[in-house]
Image 1 (cartoon, rainbow, N blue to C red):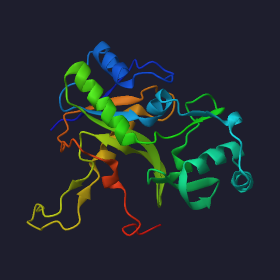
Image 2: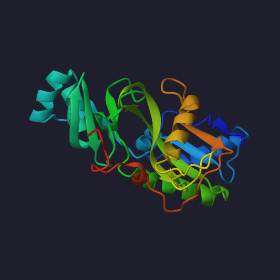
Image 3: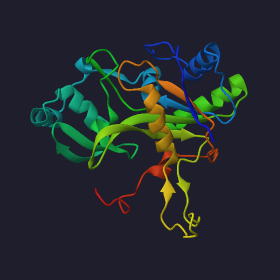
Length: 252
């Protein structure tokens, strides 16, 4: 099996509210000579989706609460940014080293509720996560089907840190057309041993591989095609399959 990760260049930057991301991707892939094919996996940075949905918040327009004002002093963060983080948070898991580890309204546990000020407007505004990344992935997949007649899987990605390891990696926060978890329990290994606990977070692995091409700084590649990968198709997929319940979680 040969897998290719193809950068999608030519998507107009910056993205503006109301932009049609699916149409932009179709036009850009056609223009660069890599039209979408059945079985492709599209990995798309959540940031361009959030921007197209108008989820850009000017920090100067945000009125901090008393809680945000108090936290900002200990965290050395602007109180307006702290307020925005609190609004996107179900629960604060930990405060340390200027970082708020939160459980977002989606159920993700990540730094600063996934709110980002990089690649927005130089620090004056922040971008929040889409309220329903699965729905965004579904819409893009369906739009591409209508426009191009091809069946692709879609993964919406974001960058998360990891407990006990330095550095960040891309992970999936929304999926459509692909089963995000490949359960290998019951399969045999090379020596006939029956696997009892192996489950592969395939959507996260694809998102992480895509980030090698997408980058996190000034690369200007907010989406890629992953081509040649064998995966389990699923019309009712959900990122919830990857989220541990509190009962399963060993660290919270």
